[in-house]
Image (cartoon, rainbow, N blue to C red; front, side, top):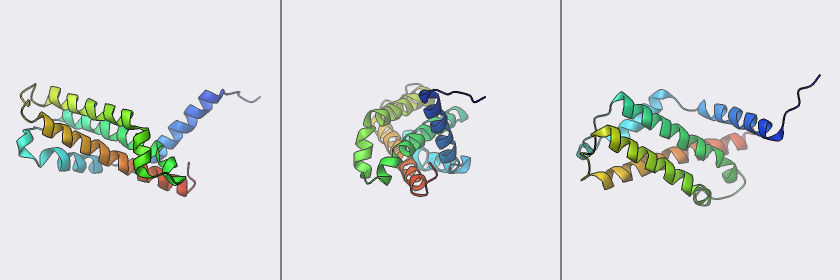
Length: 147
């Protein structure tokens, strides 16, 4: 006897499998190097990268990567990267705000008021970079018909 699945269950299962395939491209080393590139080279930020901050950055990077990967199918079908980013502007802004507030809270407990704008731009560039990586990976998977 066959198991009957609803459409939403099937879509969710396909989404999870696609995200698993996308996440095979990521490695912990890549994530750590990117965190150091964005947040450790600028000493004016005054950040001390603890394990808690790294985990928060990992989470946001993975979410941004998956968000870009989900919009990679539009790039495969001919839509420009900028147009695809406009589609998910609200979700991307949410990720930037989440990372910014997380770092402000766990970084130095409110002592970074002077550098908030600089930190915000670093967070924005960090999320944008991971979104672009995910977008390219998603377009590649659609091109190779692995979706």
